[in-house]
Length: 164
View 1: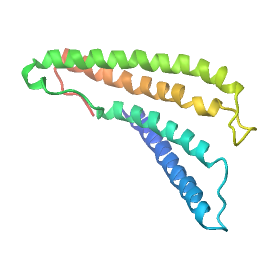
View 2 (view 1 turned 90 degrees about the vertical axis):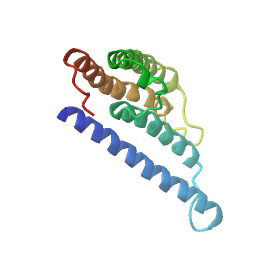
View 3 (view 1 turned 180 degrees about the vertical axis):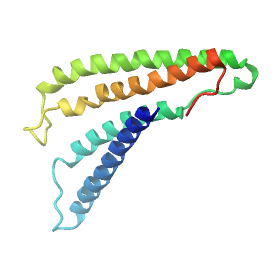
View 4 (view 1 turned 30 degrees about the vertical axis):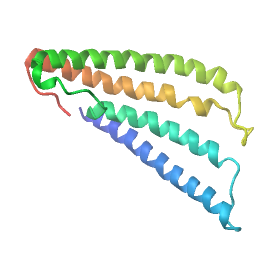
């Protein structure tokens, strides 16, 4: 659990840094349109979109750890507790498979096709960085899904409540 806490905090810190950078770059770009002495760099839109894609997928991995994704709970009170745990386990196993696909296929795509292109406004920068969030998020999702699956199995076997 302490290792997962550290990984969670690192992921959260990265998301915070990305959000701050996003806000600063967007503010500079918007102000640069109206205030003559503030530059409006041509690269701002592409960088903001890239940072947002990192933030979106990394924060999705954070939601896995806390179990805060949108879920259908309308029938939860009518189903037996063991069945609910089994359904949660099944859902997490499917997300785990998705995370493996994101890591492997995402890396192949980012390192081949993505690495061949460049940003329009920054021809010196590879588009690898635009596609890299997918395998990175897959890695974080795998890490957090292992913990979630372990907690579900523990709940099934020992009847304990999951640690969040």
